[in-house]
Image (cartoon, rainbow, N blue to C red; front, top):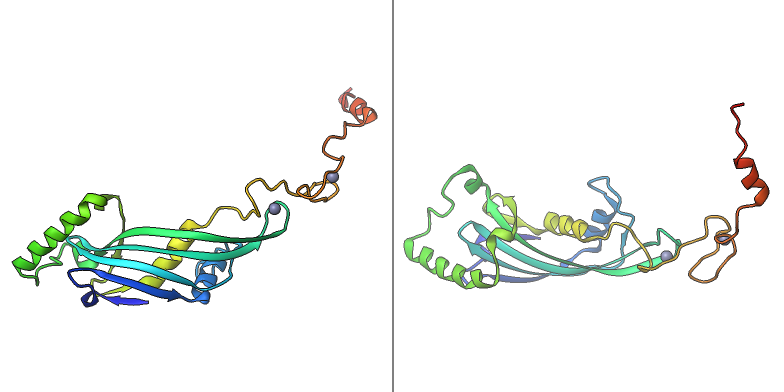
Length: 201
Ligand SMILES: [Zn+2]
Ligand SMILES: [Zn+2]
């Protein structure tokens, strides 16, 4: 998913692009990073993005919903969830990072329009709060951004539900479905007595 800088007009660019199942799946299984999240992608997604030129580069706002599955860490049951991913990034051209003048080709009136456009944006959003990403100044590749933002949005642990009770470590019964007596069973008094025996004399 590539966006050329020329595609972003003064009024900005709005995109609605499919995100391939493979892209999501590879990110989750760590195909590139080697870091498997334990989640799998269940369906493709749709990226809704808006890009706007700002004096520091390009402001990118994006969102999508990732349908993922896994195995519950506590009860081993199926986990099926939609993970909302939403992000705002300030894409900074390399040239600006290096200290070149990114905007030197633009005439002054274009600059003024830009300042006004920024003024409108400024009210609802603080640019300083956005994370920065560097790009080559010509082409923005959305794929690595999607991968990275998906991983940032994923929950640490896969659980079928927040209050999943898990499995009994002793008898293996699913505590969501039934109770067992293991958890409340008092320590055998004979074993308790053994605990008090001093072994060093
Ligand atoms: Zn569970
Ligand atoms: Zn039990």
